[in-house]
Amino acid sequence: MSAEASAIGARGEHQALLLMDLQAEIVDRYAAADPGYLGRVAQAARTARAHGVPVVWIVVRFRPGHPEVPMGRGTFGAVRERGALVEGTPAASLHPTLETRPDEPVVTKRRVGAFSGSDLEVILRAQGIGHLALAGIATSGVVLSTVRAAADLDYGLTVLRDACLDGDAEVHRVLLDKVFPRQAEVATVDEWAAGLSRDGA
Image (cartoon, rainbow, N blue to C red; front, side, top):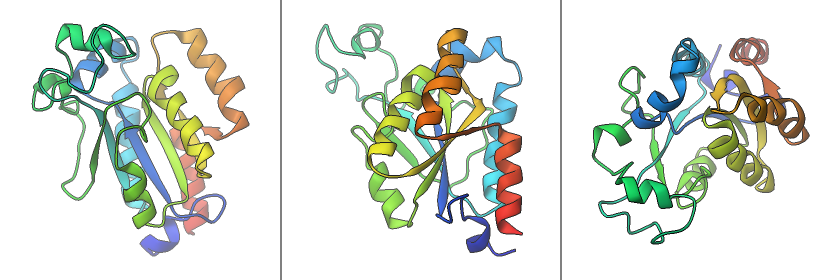
């Protein structure tokens, strides 16, 4: 099958896989509760590559001193106080067990959602992407914010249920079962992979 044919999503749109906030500090904080999590993320990335679907890594990082974060307030106020997620530090880098490729863009954002304070949309539009598969940490953070923004931008959406993670299991469940289905398809990595195989056959 051709890469072009196999990169077509369920609605006939070219799609990309966004892997979001999978940085060492964030993964280490959340993933201990689910030992198989990083393996499913890696499976999603391998599946995307095998079907010609672009993989885009999304990271949240700040310059030294956190000039992007208001002093004493805002979502990232605690991050600034801890001096966390600073560009160039190991804690802000993608988790070392994840296999990235030089041709896969790493998009830096300065806020919760993948589109906020980043050039993500420029990259997606340049590649003719109309459908996004989303995975990352946390379900109630970057995944939720990106679903909302992407839906407003008229992207088709698939949320990879078992490649998302949250510190609150009930919030995670409600988002995946009640909230996201209003604007996105919700599927496991295996289900998404099977759909790519059917569409590319």
